[in-house]
Image: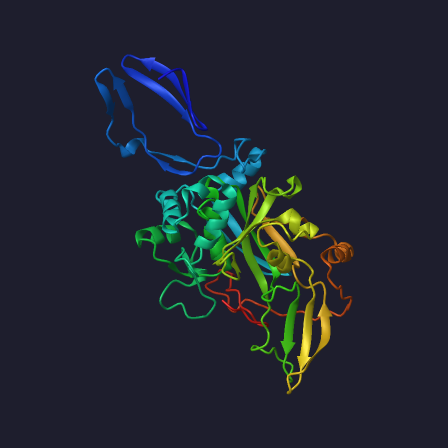
Length: 418
């Protein structure tokens, strides 16, 4: 072997020799696929070639590298890398926008077996090797693989009160126990999860996130809309008695919903839309045939640029001040608008602060101040409503368990179809 040997985007070099021993340095390319690699040495002599036998002790893992400026997930500040890649414990916020609660979550990305479990998720989901070197594609694939809705992914969602055949979502305290159970059971989905569990596990692995070197954080959106009809409005239909018509109301609003943000460059978008990206593994709507969401540029959501990939319209409807329209129906099925609320959706968005257990209010990263709303609506070609009378949908935790101060997110008005 010469002083330096290049093969594709990898770099190999002799670092030193001592007696019959040779120390070789190998540097993977910034865009190579991530995963577990095996090594061997081929000795070439006049008598032919001889290869060393397989030795699992010399296997090594290649991950995304937020320290390398050439990597899509490069982060310039060391404090951010410490918080969003190396920190193995986090805070997930919940409750209501005027009564915020929280709980600790063990991401456990450095615990034994977790990295192999993450790679198992990729293999079980048959993620093509071609996608495993592209952080954008891998995040999108991982978003689908965290839920079991259509691909036998890691977690089974359950928004009922019956958890008799599994573990209640409120009982989980971290990701390793879930991922290791998934690996131990040979890829059998784990029961059960709600949004913060999906987000917590996704933040460890998402088959790519902190465990595989991608900077990530959990974000909670208070008063989070689910635009089931895709019209950038939330339509709540009341029956003749004033109650919500479950059969006719498809949209919904949750008191809170948690997802992930990943930090990355987006060479497929204009430069200003790099940075934090939304990725959500809670199975709400299908995207390109699978239950997944993102990665979606937070900056694009703020600007109302909804034509860029992926799933920008859905995320926009979750967080922006879209109209919540209340219809009154009579016994004949006729409806009329009785109230419009333009400010209820996306009351507050928070995430854990760097080097602190307090939260950061990041609402302004998703939306402009209220006075600028009409500019975005005009840009989108939406009809703005100006009714100032608030008519909020009331969504509250269904129960507070075991002194945790943390309840399961329950829909009171509207419907959830999943």
